[in-house]
Image 1 (cartoon, rainbow, N blue to C red):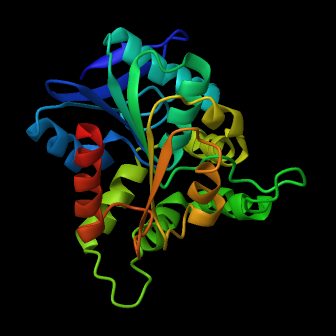
Image 2: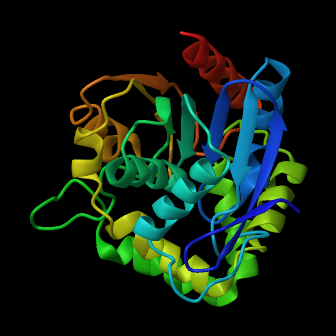
Length: 272
């Protein structure tokens, strides 16, 4: 399996499909690079180089005890981009991956980056505080942590709101939901716990304000995992060069016609 080695010795697995301008994907919690397979194939089929990595603690990457925080995730992404010597990159981050992308840009700048896509991203700050009340209370994230006590059953249940299968008329296949569970079960328990704090408690307001390349914010208005009001509707006010595209009725996860819409949106943005 192809891997790169980070400064602290972690092995980060990645997929590298196609050729051309690189499009680098960062996945959400509690998943791995496999969740991006459809998009990797789409961009590779259209003449681009699709790259996606397993975040540390997830999938085929090292299950490190330390380093499950947004700064280290961002530095791991930088190590991947630097090791592969990528330039003119289109960065695509979903959910936690959107936070990883934002923090990468805040820590490492945009010299290697052409454009950014943030889909249902956890920016700017999911945890509501006295100073920043726009997010959710800590009890919401404590409930996620409590669910990991029976993580297998928890992940089975999480697939329902993740893909909107709990909405009237939804028809998300059992296969899609089973794949979500299977991928989620590859995440180390320590990383799964720590990542909740990383994606909820990390304030990326300053990171967003410093992004000087075009950004596409893509979000479903029925996202039950990262509500648009707490994230993209706040982020658009912070980014100096961004467009917000709202997908009516779309859930957090990419599935069915919502996935097809995003695929076309992604290709159009890359070409623009």
